[in-house]
Length: 201
Image (cartoon, rainbow, N blue to C red; front, side, top):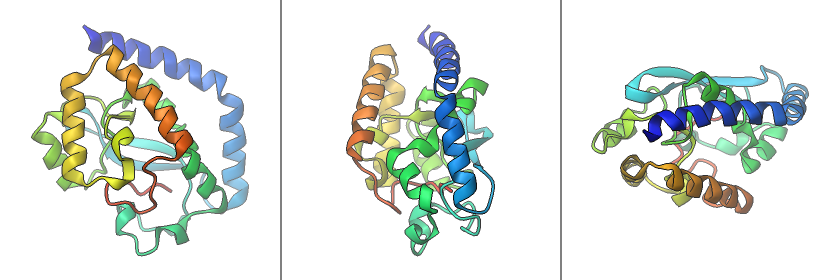
């Protein structure tokens, strides 16, 4: 069954990635620490498989006085909260790298719906319609390469449901390939986009 193989792949690939990218993780950690006050990592309560809770890890890209547990698009001026290095981290999506540890732990998968905030009831409710809350959330997903921050919640949930129905090795490989393309082109990145649903410090 692919779900079992997928979990094994997640463990192996995330472990290898952590080892191979350890130098980059260290450099980024130092950069975050010296560029602004506060912790290196940002932890935030998210919704995982079967609507359980876990804490997601990111390199902190926003100031410590940013309102907590508030979607980015609801901040009056999101850019004003971003740290000097945070701009670079978010532009390149390098702030997401600590989620390799979430994948290794089993909180997340490499590919799956992006985990909703613990209080993002509208997205969770929409995902329930498609069974998208019953698979592991991912570092990247079908919705992320089809609009990312620019799509509204109903469409995002629908795309997450489409992924749930099409989940498989070849589809996951396609999403991973298209993710690299999207990151390089900064496709769909919009600070405070309504579809983002994430307060990424």
